[in-house]
Image (spheres, rainbow, N blue to C red):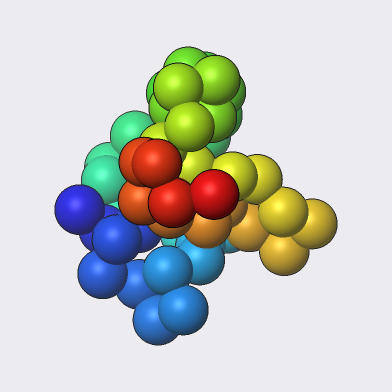
Length: 55
């Protein structure tokens, strides 16, 4: 929910990691899984929440 509520729906891995209380590597692995399923998109500036089916 943290990424979804972020301003502009975009956060850096470090910010997301800190807000979740997870290590960066765990967040990165989870984002990779979510990206493969179309839930997030990675950008040069951070991960962006995506709404499934809204291409």
